Length: 306
Image (cartoon, rainbow, N blue to C red; front, side, top):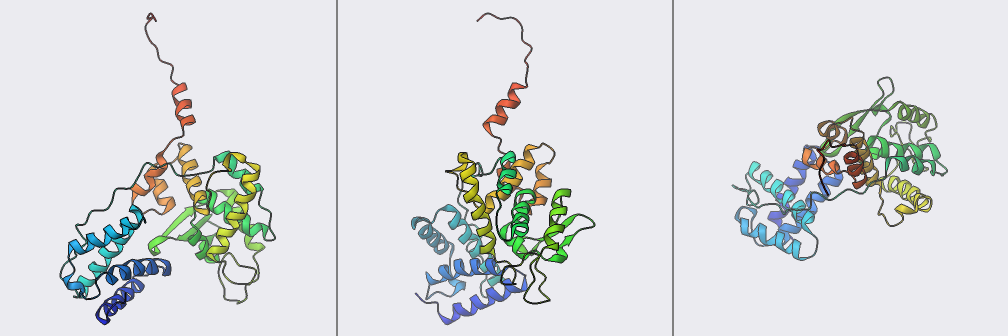
């Protein structure tokens, strides 16, 4: 089903707004996909006549298609933003999605992660032609919590050797600064010394592919996938665990909280979460940790008969 000319115009306005606000290409494409799908449900309706019931009906279709509650909520967020922009540019007078409630999703699901003592084993198994580059990528995920996209966007200028910090361009084009452990600083320095020659002299990407270009997101994911393959052979307890590059970010957050030296607000800043509720998924504690904590309690009780 096609979109009429009028809706193509409002979609173009939507895209211009997203670009002007500095949203990443991936985010633009995600929002555009969800909104385009929504407008296709109403080919003969100007956006100014779309009502709350129309939005709810579309979201119900998404749920019934088997996409799940997270996909429904993502679509709702995109539609809300779309109508906010439509009001700003006077294509609509109200936002029919504003009062549509989000679906409840499971918030207490324990994130998959690799135990602290096993992370070192993962890095020891790195064996590639570009050893220093690949080792540094995995170390930044494991011990600094970087996302794949953040590693992809990392430039040489973002590495501040003197202060031992990384400037990270995260989601929503927001910057955060991460103080690095001394060993990671030394690793980055060594990695930079062995950086592959870029095809263009002005290329400032920190990580370069064998073709002399900025290392792609898919290539970064492949680095992690290859390491996980070897890791599961050496650590059979993870054989049936679904591991991905993002699981290293989970591992960083979970293991850092387990040290007891960081509060939730600090972890939120390190991870670049806009909402602290997102960070709260890492407050889970393993059964072993619970048992160890309770074993440290020595109750003083009066004598009693059993």
